[in-house]
Figure: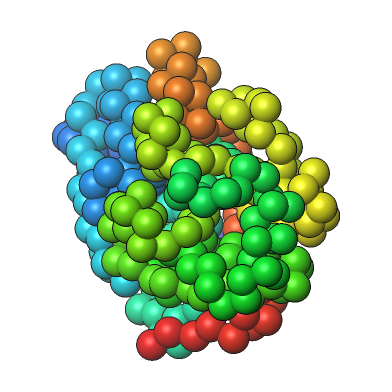
Length: 331
């Protein structure tokens, strides 16, 4: 090859290498400086629910670790779809994050016919942050103290037991369908626009039963306004160690818990993803954060992005089968 041609080829190769290196160098520089301004953590539900409660605990700890405020932005509606869509359409720069949970990220894709976002293609998993055991609660005027007693009562009063939920197709609606199918009972579903009004009517006696996350129901259980009869996780809850699981109550396949994790818009630069993941791991072993989460009945659990992606993929499959068996579909 002539010297002139060789110099041209070498120059072109150097230019191409520089073109590849510059974006990577820019990403690394951004990650070293990140964050330089407040971060928004979108909670796709109204204030006061479990996702909001846990999101605020995580946001406060994350802000302290990163040296910038992490602001909670409640964008409720459509079972979490509105908030999820807002994050899916945000810039992938680490300044807009989603406080996701299996109800929105794993159930909604099978439940809603049309979604403007995709659970896998629209987000980058950052880290799991908590698992929460769910609890079965009844109005205390009901002569029921255990899950077997609820099953017996429902069989003796077919169609007369109403159970409330946070909305059609919510994880708690589906939990009620699972209980009815596995126990061979008939209960009437009464959907509400959120957990708060559902709990209010349960305490007023308008409904008799409800499935709830522990953080949402805990104050009313402690005050005696609700009676807890079982938890639906694989193990007993540290908050209610005396309360048996649904499995212990005779329903061996009745396992329904909730997980919560942080997601970012798809395409988040790897160095920023790594920075966020590391910070969340540090947050979730901080004694104050651990104490706050456990007081709410939540178990702090960090993960790698890949572990959260695998958890989501498995839940998408399992909940698809449950939604199909329950014959639930929403526009």
